[in-house]
Structures are given as structure tokens and as C-alpha cells.
Image (cartoon, rainbow, N blue to C red; front, side):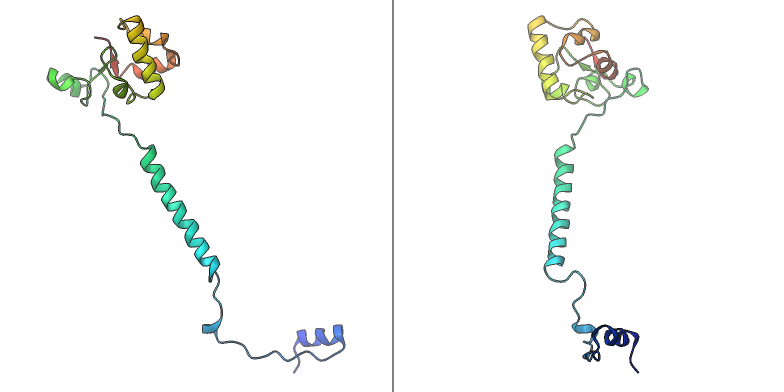
Length: 152
């Protein structure tokens, strides 16, 4: 018995529908994403994974654990443990190096070098507020830095 598609073929062409040939077994059919498409997808996903790993490695900076002043952890530590660079200590902006300053929130390499240059040109800071004389540091940045820095 002719199928609906065979009847439609006959109406359109006026001839009998061509024989439908044998179906190939499922094991010989080409699966989706075969060949070049599959390897292209593998290459793209591999590149994304490499990029993600590189991004994590390049953007993660280790920062020292600095606590707010007046917390029991910093108050109970001996003076030797409160030196700059140790967890729980305040960073003295008059003796800190540019590398130490970079660990502070909102301070990158450029601003850290400007702080060191300003300190060398104008002398030591008498108050934390004097940091506003450095280009790129304003009242908001000083507020962020206040829990982590001191002038000794």
C-alpha cells in the first residue's frame, strides 16, 4: 500500500515514487558530532579550560591576613609578632616597601610606587590623612586603608 508521501510524489510529478532503498543499520549511521565537528568541540572546550586555569593563576594574589586594630588577636600578640608583614599587624606607611603596600586593598603597583616616591620627596607621614597628597588616593581610599595602616 502506497504511503502518503508516495501519493504526494505521484500528484506532483505524475510518476510513481522511486523505491526507498534499504535502510542502513544503526551501527553504520554517522552519529551526531562526528569527525571534525567533534574534534572542533573538544579543541574549544580544551582551550576554555586552559584559559580558565591561566586566569585563576594570574589573577589570584595572596594577601596577608591583617585584622582590624583593637581586636583581641592583635592585642594579645607580643610586639615581635606585630611587626609589618605578620598577620594581625598594622603596616607602618613610613617604613613599608612598595611590595608591602601592594597588599593593601585598593593599592596597586602604580600607587604603591607613588607613595614611596612621595615619602622620599616630602618626608615621613605624620598622620594617615596625609596620604591624600599622593595622586590617586582620596578620602574613600584612606577610609578603606585605615584599618590596615598606621603611622609610627
